[in-house]
Image (cartoon, rainbow, N blue to C red; front, side, top):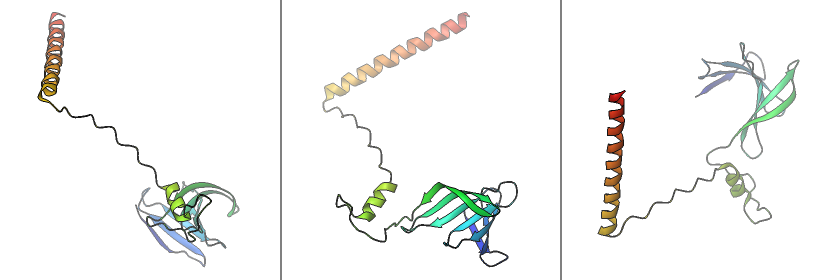
Length: 154
């Protein structure tokens, strides 16, 4: 997915064309705080504000407009660069630097790996497992044969 951003028809305006939604186009207006309010062309308006925050993240906020002015906004999505570093790396009360604390808040904790069953260590254990598997296979064959007989008799 990509977007092409070009200057709009007037000062402080932008034109955005996306590679998604069949080439959806947006009209953007640069706000006094440096954020950009985008409104879709066509039926899907979906007005939203793109903001670069003080900590280097990009936020996409859904907005409601009245006469072209933002009257309310809702947090929608927050994106941080892969090599994210907070501008001031001061430590919090627990002594954890702010950049590590910020990273910990956005990086999901991986799920623990499922336990690996212990491998048999002796030939007798392998033989016992093989015998149990053979019994299961024989029971399955009997069940399949019974099912085939019932189907043939029906």
